[in-house]
Length: 465
Ligand SMILES: Cc1ncc(COP(=O)(O)O)c(C=O)c1O
Image (tube, rainbow, N blue to C red; front, side):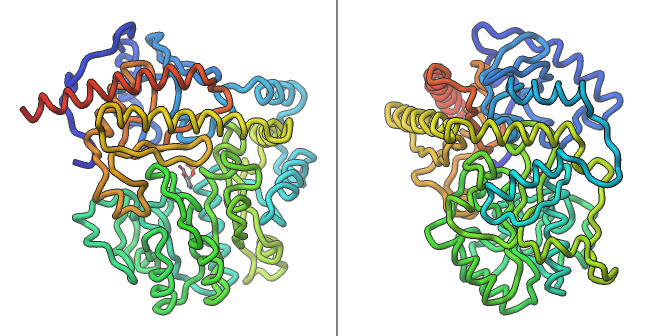
């Protein structure tokens, strides 16, 4: 079972937690005006909770329940919620000048672009947008423009935004996908209605860590661009095997496609230079969002200056349209500047702190697995991790879908929420530590994880007996 369709009263609300009557009231109200009561489809999840406040490593719901947060709003809050330095900088900007001019340029956007070019090795030129989806859209369009080709490659199990090119082949049920193919490609499996068939024919999905399939597709179609997260972080933490990212670089050079690293989740969370700086592989274009501004809406498309210059090419037939009323709005722009400055402080102390927490968390969870005789591993990169109920860290979506116990994963997460620890209650979703978490938070979390796993396995046992 992929999505975990369980009876609501499968377990009870944890000790010390209030009922969620106010959450229910608010959701019922919002459902009258917003389809489903939520403004992003994934937010419709069980248990239904309306949140009211976030501070550091904690979030509170409208009924006053407090949770240690490992969701981080799908990743942005790398410095924790409401980081004082970022918040103060934003407040000052709001007081002094947060106007939008929509003409010419501003000092803030130049400052942010310079910071990024200075610290991200593959960023020679930068454009500022609002969301990761806009940035991946523009990256792919730019890839098509510079190559004069239409086909693209994406990874099965990768998420790169909601638009037509990439809204496909994420957590595709294996029944729909068929067996693992290599070398080869998977059929387009949309995650949205409304994608024209003509468009679908241009998108080729292959498994992560499968260079042979990339070569196979390149030999068959004129590929404009390949887009991939350098670590698949929308199905937990699926890391590149040694040689995979550099192999993509070599294939890009051999076949002439544009290599796009989607660092919306990995960027700034793993290093200021992005995961590509740790891997030592330079993409042609790179996309950032999320942790870049610790929760404020901004995204970056950066890369080779010769490619990026297409956005201002004097020839109308060569120029790629990049436009946006809110691009480089001063509030998210200054939030990004403040976030990067925070990340650079004390020679990257933030990264050493979250690494120590991550090591303790991974070790602690793996010890609990072994104490409770549970088959499980923790895949981790720095502050981002994912416990899997399988005996090895997955290398691609097929490996994960075939071996991971999705039912236990969802039940475990839901019980944990009732114990005051919020990891997103959908199987395989990434857990995110922040610099606001402490070793004491990790200890409390480990205690609750042990409790929740014991309850989860007892509940599952009851269900089968
Ligand atoms: C790797 C990756 N790319 C792109 C996106 C899209 O970003 P946004 O939600 O800001 O449009 C996401 C969002 O989760 C993501 O994880």
